Image (cartoon, rainbow, N blue to C red; front, side):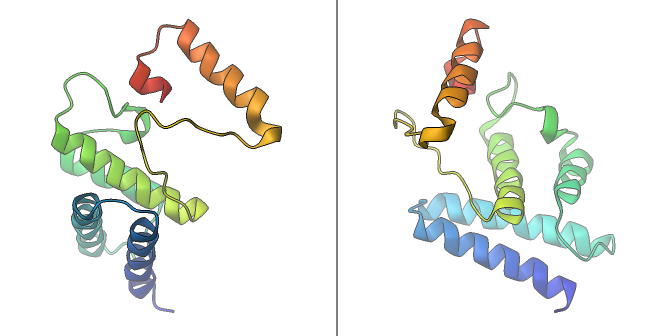
Amino acid sequence: MHSQNEFQELMQMARQHMEERGFTYTTVYCFLRTWRSVYNFALSRGIPKYSAELGETYMQEKYGIAIGETPEDGPGLTTYMVQKIRAVRALTDFLLHGFIHRIKYGEEVIWPGKYYAICTAFIDDYKTQDYLDATCR
């Protein structure tokens, strides 16, 4: 398959995944708008396929943000920038894992049995370090 088609297919599959998981129309639309911008950025630089590195380069060059080091709830980030970061991270997650996590605030997380102890210990450690609730979520 031609690489540009792979990129477009990745975006379409991620969109379908989000729709099947019940993401709102607005979220899907906003993510798609960002993904298309990343796609056009890649084409303009002769980059044929999406990668985590491409997402990071896009955010760094277009917005001056290193998303690997930027918390989504960080001080000074506008709602617009938070949406951009989430969209790029979502496409990377879908590329790497075939899954995009849907954030539902207040939803209880049920950890699979073998992960329960390590995940709850990790979150408890975050809480003892005075991380914000949004970071722990």
